[in-house]
Image 1 (cartoon, rainbow, N blue to C red):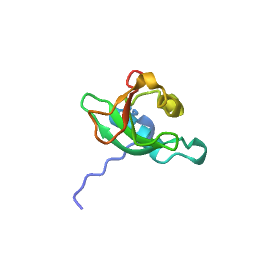
Image 2 (cartoon, one colour):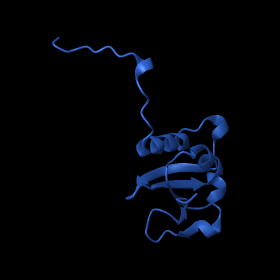
Image 3 (cartoon, helix red, strand yellow):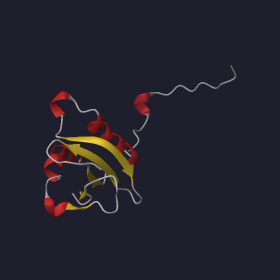
Image 4 (cartoon, rainbow, N blue to C red):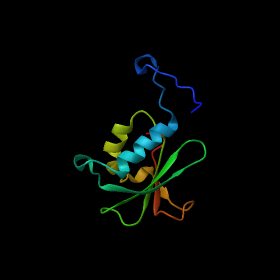
Length: 113
């Protein structure tokens, strides 16, 4: 067929480091399709990649009316963030009115968490 076939031994290939896109995909995957034992009170409704790196998560919950937005930096502590997310959404000192975003009731800034 005119194509060159290169054989690669997977044991000799160095693994590529996780990129910010990989971290974002992993976080979104865990929120969108949690396993039965990992179901959270907060449900993912959407997301937005923001300028400068943060990821805006649009969430809803049975405990709060309307849509809650959480700004996060996808990174290495995803397991901790996923476990703490429902309780962090209720911390009033982290919240601000969603004036800059018409799609949510309020914004929770978790970029420093």
